[in-house]
Image (cartoon, rainbow, N blue to C red; front, side, top):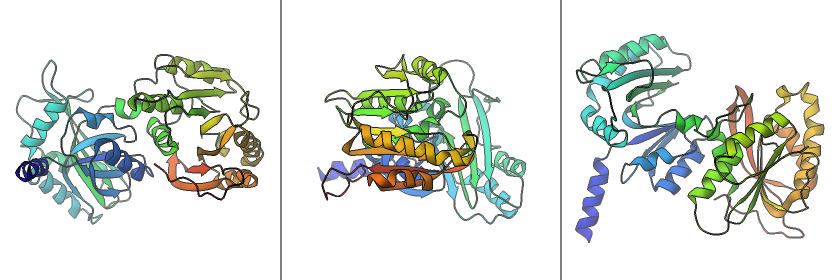
Length: 381
């Protein structure tokens, strides 16, 4: 038995490392998903990045919901100098560090070529101030790959079979072979869209933080395009067993309700209605989990309108949420939200700083107290 275990450990050690690109601020949530759902070992997190290892690499890695993309790791560094000398390092590391044939074999197992000629695409992304341009970094990256790609592969601008990325963020750079495609971040269920629709990976993070269990009633009172409800429905389907989760959603905008109906109708049963979230047609204490992305101040006529809106929403949220229930809320004006919820003694159990639609905002998890109870809030799953 000991020999067999050692062989498994040695085999796992030979597998390439992987990394996930995440929405800024969701790194720990993505790391938790990798650990809990894939039983992976997280090796490092940085801004927008999670490096990890798995005991086996297969299509399950494409099931991650809180990551934008997932890659086989070719090389990585968090010691960039910000100077032009980095360009020589990009060229050398790309040419010499990776075992490219092995990485390509793993890619082909996960994403086999179905038909046609092998095509590839090179992507270079750069954020932050550096002593060189993105085009300079891409030129060095390409030079490092000059003798790596097999003859007969054709470079294309889109829909390539294989993509190799160089991502530079401040002093960190990672290079890898992309295993995911655009559906990991954009999702296939989003057939209809509305302006300022929530990013699916952010919605998936909200759903995970909500700790939804079988038999619960889950509410999104301002559902927009239905992204949060779609992610909740996906998670409920993945976690089979127990009573079904009841999903409810609505919006004051009839077009939003129509879009949600179109997006969710193909996925499963969700109760949708047009309503004013300040006066919900729901019974008191009828909801176990409440998830909401209410309008940001910049979406209204003035920021001053936010506090009255949040105050009215908070009163209704407190009415429909069960004692001991949990709410996951994404807002720009966290102070106004805290003021609105303070009369109800809700407590914050987790806060994450994000940027959504270019604006800094806060993703927060709240616990409604049990009536006349001093029990501490439950831990986040």
